[in-house]
Image (cartoon, rainbow, N blue to C red; front, top):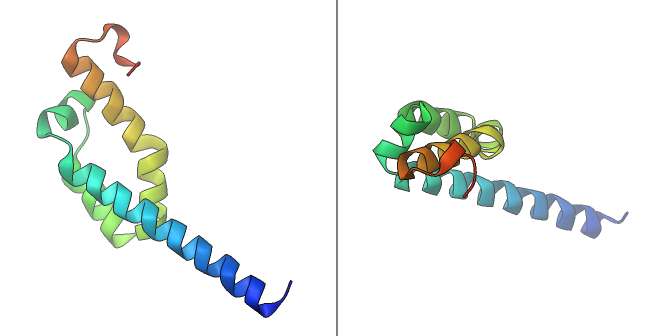
Length: 85
């Protein structure tokens, strides 16, 4: 792999990491408090994790926190089982 190819790869990884970070922040800040409560989660704790550990926190939120929020939203909306969208 050439230097230019390596630079492109690193740039794409950095851009993808930044996109996941921004998406996590957007989701955390725009989700209604009632959804957080229905999911049994703390919005401010997730915000702190994503801000202070951007890469790890964002990946953790997307992998685990977002799924719980969807279940909480569905539970709040009265979807049976609270697991489908």
